[in-house]
Amino acid sequence: MTRPAPEDPRAARTRAKLREVLLAECAERPLEEVGVAALVRRAGVGRATFYVHYDSLEALAVDACADVVRDAVEALHAWRGRPDPVHAPPALAEFFASLTPHTALYRSLLAPGGGGPLGRVLHRDLRAYSLRERELAGAADAPLVASAVAATFAGVLADWLHGLLDGDASDIADQVWQLLVALHASR
Image (cartoon, rainbow, N blue to C red; front, side, top):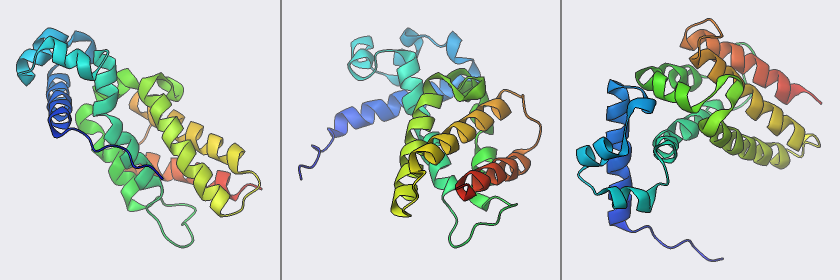
């Protein structure tokens, strides 16, 4: 088995700095109002350096928000044993609550219904994780349920961020959890 080459530490630092600056910029103004020139100036890198790492601001924004995807996948799988069918694991409510500082950025990358560039990443990663779990459990319906879980979670998350669903972080966590438990229980 071939291991991936280790990442160049300078490239990793540059991408981290660009992500950090983008999040700071988006805390001050919508993504649509952030320009590459201002971003690279604030980050202390050249415009060409930006384009070595990202082909657009949207690509940088999705990368900057990728931790949200990992956090969502981890929060959905933060339980052990038999899941409570009514109340979400605390990590899921904490995940929804953690979105508040950058809600506008997430809204710009995650369209209602779960589409958009961040929605595609969320769906892909959540479906892959769910598929692995279902296959390990020997579930014959693994691909179907994995797709349904990913679509349900991405759609509910996006609609909540866009104000299409009522409830605080704890309420929405419990509601989406109940849907996901029902999907996993289906045969």
